[in-house]
Length: 358
Image 1 (cartoon, rainbow, N blue to C red):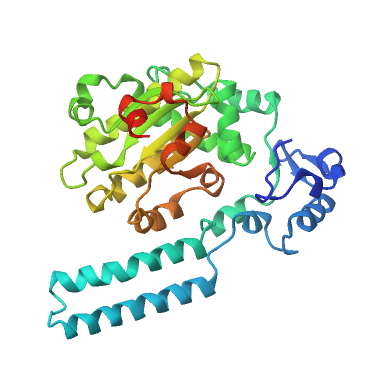
Image 2 (cartoon, rainbow, N blue to C red; image 1 turned 30 degrees about the vertical axis):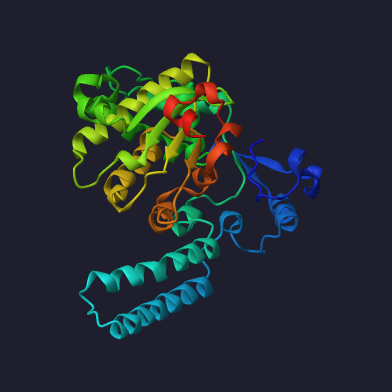
């Protein structure tokens, strides 16, 4: 049984009966939903508030207090910056003023990040997923979904394309067990594969991105997942070619998936090297594309995402980006510093430049 429990809740805190007796089959969605009795037991175990959707209890929303506090502190920082600028004889248009303001705001962004550590939960998503514990239907459900989508699947979606039971299971998990939502997502996926044909992208189409060495697939993590390495410091929003950048992302995803499946796995590890991250690297357009593509066309393909050596300025970018990430996927993100990377990846499996920097 797949069960989502608030981090830090031990197995002993849950009533064993919750795991074995309190699940009932919901024929309408061919999934497994927790009964009212089980929901109450779960709320008691993890401290959820009665009557509040458990998704909200697990992942939380930004508190009003945190919002008002950080907003007030930002205003105060701006006023202090103005006062300092006036004292040293600068004007608001002077770069010195903005440098002072940035220095004052950076710690506040870090405070905001800590006060609001959990991603916002989409209220609409809460209403479409009525129960907090969902077990995707087994092979029978996946097979039924496969048969349902077979008639509309394109004849040729390119290399790597298949609407098999494994694909259907991934879309079911991403759809919280809702077969109708999964079927609609699969229809969108098959149409996209036929039109974009990501499996057909060649190295000749991404020569400029390759020369920069911005991203590539190399080695395996300690769980056996192939690793997609991405160096944020080598990305420049002002000079990048968006089309080629998108093709490079798709090319790497396809390569990583093929390597995973050759090992009998479905997921990959992504390591973002943030050691050279700066304002030039803040590309919301590319980041939003990456997140949307993984959500819509590569669901359940991320095993883990390691954010390595993030500088302080990254918190400003992260505070925006993390709100675009699905709450379940958000739990796969981990911040790692220095040699702690070896806890996830053996040195021999790292690119030489990464291994030498440890």
